[in-house]
Length: 70
Image 1 (tube, rainbow, N blue to C red):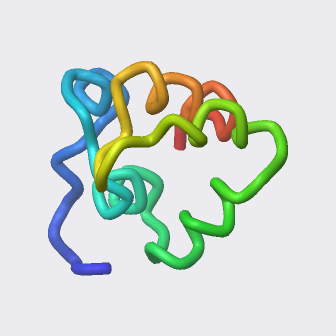
Image 2: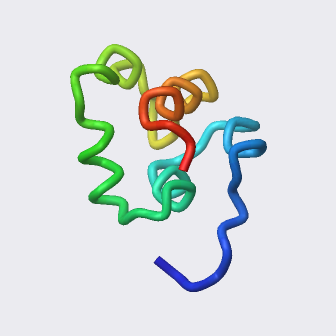
């Protein structure tokens, strides 16, 4: 990750669809780590409906509820 401060915070992460890279930046982890965190049975029902490269606002809210806010 870069040394620049993250522009994403809990108040604006759910304001529009986000990519895996955005979520990884929000949690300050590598994309591979984020992908492994999302590969769990508890989130499978939510992430099965992912369209393209973006997570919907509802999916992001579910992810944050499962992983907690960093």
